[in-house]
Length: 465
Image (cartoon, rainbow, N blue to C red):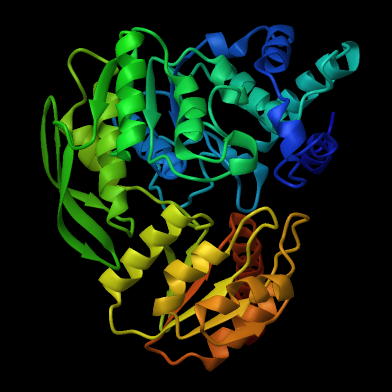
């Protein structure tokens, strides 16, 4: 039997476009290979209902909100999201892993169990080694998606909430037959793979809807909205759009989150608590509520919505990890996400000095990020994660130079973070952004340092006693 590190290493052997971006190869991926893999595994994706969530931004947030609401309703729910920040098992979760009285204060407690992860990988290993693949072997993402499907089937989940990885029409998750599809805001991202205009990108993302089913959509730009309405009408889908009978009102917004009310075509949910930052999360919450309402003719109990949203946690997305100075981690890496980040910083800390630590992937264009965040930044430190796709810190600084802010280059992200922490006052706001790889690397380092401090304190306490 494999160990967990051996199982992770085995998956890492296969082509991983998250680590080595190859636009030409990515455009050539077809769903037939994923369907073939699922067939060889006994089609586990057919043994549970699913909700498929796509879009350019907000996919993971909406998925997690749906998961928590369904969990609060007492259902056996699976969750599949990407990317992971520290451990691949973060991507695959199930309420069946939770103790009966789970407090929710340990975000890792619902991850796929290590032994189960290994067993699923071993099952996939046997299929890969016993078959030939005329279109080339499956990719890392396809294999990890298959692990999720096997796991959810084993756990007998009633419904799985799945985040689309890239695009929609040809994404590995799209082999399921979702009962509800959700689209977050659609904008320009991955243009070398999906198309160089928002309408082309929207066409790819609309591939996740199914005839006669339900589509819940965020508020979209005019041409995208028109396209969505045309496609859903042609496919006889029921369309629920934000702004048309689906609205969220923010009652209060602070560093602890939001109080809001949500109105849907089926009712109103008052005084909801959402412990996430960013006004955009209110719209995301409304999409999640509309999605779960669409699962049954009777909708969702208000109590489940209240309890589910109240225990939301979303690491690496406008996550405050320290308060004096305030330190915010956010994986924002495209213009839409950068706008949301800027609005949140201006909303919550309008007068504070803001210092940015940024690292991006080499396939991203950071100049637009500089235009959006440069005007509010006191200083910028350019760095790079150890990820193979990371943009060189010096090159990043050159691309951000037009924003006109003081820029320092410190390639090592831990040194960059330490530098800013030492130069900031207690009233400043430090933002680490630009890449989930950077955010995950920093979280791992900080957790390691915290564990070392706790072990040191424990040893001192033993010596004293």
